[in-house]
Length: 109
Image (cartoon, rainbow, N blue to C red):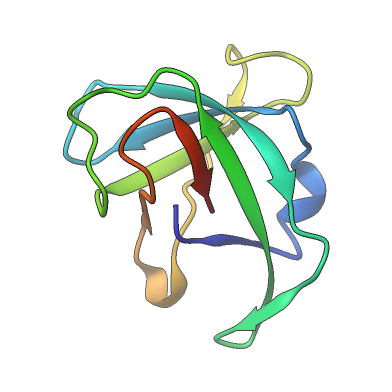
């Protein structure tokens, strides 16, 4: 995903934390993943301090394509995918994040 977590959101995310990704174009499809890295150096985007986060997709759907609009849901730490925080990540200018990988592998937020 081509998005970053703001300095307000990043402290609540940890490496290994479960993530559920839903693409707007694939209703009813939930793709499981996990956080594999969180940037330590901030970037400034549109006046916000943000940190890049990478998610490894564990069970990507073959219909998932590059550039699809997605929502990432971070699961509560150390509880697996059952208890997820349903926060939608937004790109700058309020647009949803976009997928950066179309198959199982790393996705950058």
